Amino acid sequence: MALNIIEIQKIEEYLTANGIRFLDVRVELIDHLATEFENNTCYVLLIDFLNSKKNFIINFQKSLHKKRHWTYQKALFNTIFNFFKKPSYFLVLMMIGFAIYFTQLVLNDKTLKVIALMSLVIPQIIAFYWYYSPKGVYKKIHSAKYMFSIMYLPSLFLNTSYFWFNTFHFMWFWLLAIVFNIAGLLVVYNCRLKTINLYNELNINE
Image (tube, rainbow, N blue to C red; front, side):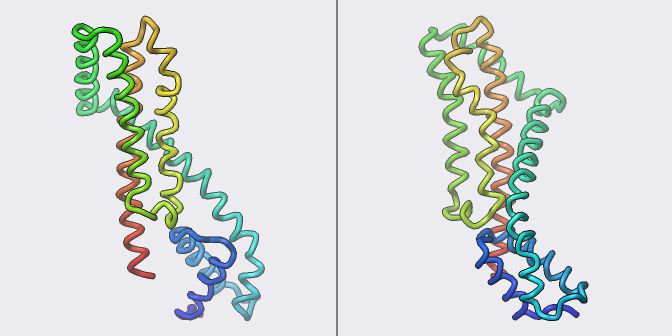
């Protein structure tokens, strides 16, 4: 027998009471729990069924962290590889490489390092801004909470900049750093659009 609106609301209240504060996680759990209860004849009362699923509910949200983290990292690597296998991306790669080579010819070492540093800092600032905008989304949507982790790998170039700023292969490190950061921004941007759409959809249905 299909659950009615009041029973669905009771499931959501139960999830909220047990610490499931993210809208998208609650929607996934409500769908799963409602379907299982409707097909399960062992329980007459909904509350008894929900109490039997308490550990599952708590662990469900935790398991999403690893799943979404690796989904984001896979998207990052796929985007990075696109710069070396897709013609349009490869053209951008060549343009960046030419720009780096040209700046090395015309600028002094100090100015060059400042520009290189800014090329790594700015993508992090943009990603950080996207993470917190629109305001409050990252607090309500679980997939948004881990969105900024996409930039952790690109940020390694910034954290180790002192090392590769002073190497013979500086130009190649800089090119790779820019590729990682651009790829990171592309993935963050796409995730942000999906998150905002999901947030708007869930807010309308609340």
